[in-house]
Image (tube, rainbow, N blue to C red; front, side, top):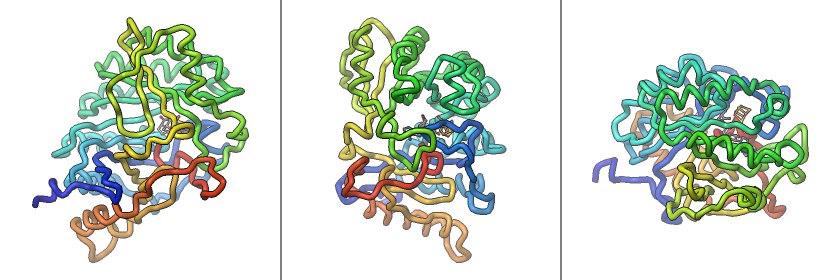
Length: 333
Ligand code: SAM
Ligand code: SF4
């Protein structure tokens, strides 16, 4: 059997063909749900080099992974990240190369990203009001993100998707404006429930978390929604808006648990392979990458073995189970 057919299957029969690869823990924003105000970032020696990130991506694709999402932190703040993206764009076996970004630098990078072979872009935006946008991101400028979205559209990206975290007390009255904004541009939008990853310093998550059921109810006051037959693996469900090209997604890791369909794993920028967003099960790939006597095959072997560690599900807000202490920027969103 070739390595390619030797696909990654866990103890529960779930096939892993998707990785989220974090290229940095740093960011030019400090979103209230993702980071604390005064963050300490990892020292350079602890993070994977661009070459090591490429080796990890190569190992996964050789094991049958078809889809890689680059994330962080903010991927576009990593210096020379374009050289990695250019190489990944040509990686044999990789069918989709995706990026999740805060959009602040897309006015500059949308065209080079398209040329590098990036398949699709997700852009996070939680408010259309400049002052509020700044309150949520603590430092971000709304106009830069809007310019970034326009640049991505002009560059010809297909199925651009916006991501919005809706939080009570911050932006729960923006569900319709954000949906209108996406719909009027024929782009998709996904509403994400805030997850309890690490301690939020400005609010209590249990008070701010809005269920997607409530968000959907808001949208249904204005639009007729049709449940889409298309099923994406993971905690997202998409609906079609009748009469519109855009789809609306609901990513509900808190109120719903779709772990039975999970097809993904994450690799942090420290080279920690995380088998589940809501659990600490992990394997240190950096140790293998930097081991004097270890080879590329050892890396692949460790990835295959790690599948046995993938837990059945996560237990957000369940008092009988330990909650993750990692913030999202360390996890790779
Ligand atoms: N910086 C990029 C961005 O913001 O799109 C990529 C990394 S960010 C960690 C990826 C996604 O995770 C963003 O859409 C962000 O809104 C989301 N996110 C971060 N912390 C979260 C949390 N605690 N709960 C839910 N979503 C979160
Ligand atoms: Fe940065 Fe993205 Fe986290 Fe916001 S959500 S602080 S943009 S990494």
